[in-house]
Length: 133
Image (cartoon, one colour):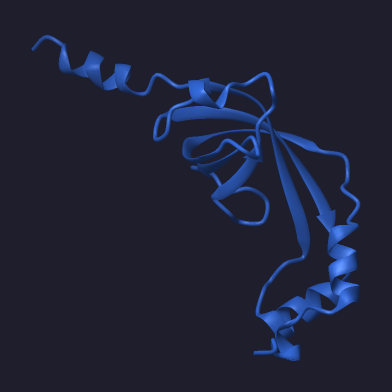
C-alpha cells in the first residue's frame, strides 16, 4: 500500500528542522526525577517539577560521558543542572506544523545535562517524627 501524500512532511520543512541553528545555551537548575534511561543514546527522560520555557515538564537530556547512567536512580529526587539550547523555527514552518499537523511548535529545544545532585528529601520528615512532645 502506498503511503498517502498528505501524511508526508514537505522537504522544505524537513530541511529547516534538520538544519536549525541553536542560540547560545542558557543554564538552568531544576529539581525533578528520572523516568527512563536510554543507554544506547546516553540520554535520560526527566520529569521536572517546574516547566521549561515551552511549558513541558518532561524532557529528554543528553548525559555527559562523565556521568554513569548505571549510578543513577529512577524516581529519586535530583537537582539537575543543564544547558537549554533553543533554535527558533520560521513563521512559515510553525504555521505549516500547526495547520497541517496540529503541532504547536515555535522552536526546537535540546537539553544537555551538566551535573546532578541527589536530594535528601526523606530526612526532613524523619526529623519531624522524632520531635518530643
